[in-house]
Length: 358
Image (cartoon, rainbow, N blue to C red; front, side, top):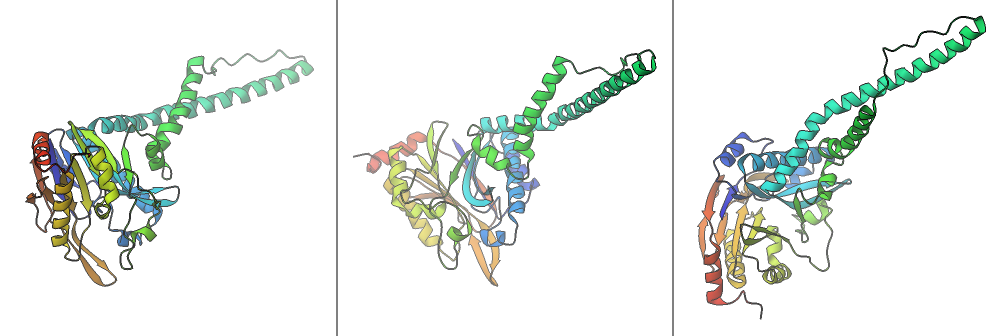
């Protein structure tokens, strides 16, 4: 299986350079993005309205969905979603099959306006018919009072056929489900969330809660007393899990992933403050003790927070079940792709035996 890490700062909307990278990828590649790549760093989000955040996220999701279908690739990426006036920090998984279905719905929305226009025209026509009928009835009463002949029926205005009425009804239903579903400025992502066949979402359960870095206060993610399983899915015969970098510290996640027989753990991160040595050891130990591959994608770039520079240093890496790092990136925007074989994972895990469920 081919996995590609994009080590990036925050991507702009419809980023052409990123689109070119995706164009060059092999089909069915799984692409991992770091934290705050699709959205700005959360400290910078404080200056944005929730409507702006919602619109930005929706555009980025549609962009990834388009790239997934066009190039037959898959994405795992952190996002910030606005749902029912609240902000949630989540991971989205977009598979090729799901992206195709979603983009078919997008295409329907682009064509549905014609049906909506037909609906409005038919409704206006029906209104004219009703007004004409009322006027004829009134004219008939007046003419009978005067002894005149009743006016000739106006055959130029025809009532809608049964098919037209059905079209109107269907158009209204489609507009409600699809047009609002994809285009609406308020409920789009909520509707997407309800359609589990389109995307998979994982909402972060443990957020950083320090004085200088308090995501738990900024986001509305629920604080679970008992941790649930992270996002786990199957891709090309591999059991793959995805959770946020900060959640790597909590043993409950790793116990649940070991029970599920997870082969690869994806860790999108936003690490800074020269913590790279600690993170390297942490990823190696987790991979070694759980008999799995740990793939960490860390953000790069600089954010100015309270007149101080926060430097995100990159060093995205791949740690194998034998506790060794086989590849990594430096501190600049870059990417690397790696072919991973399940038999190698199982061979290393079997050698040490830590993956067994005793």
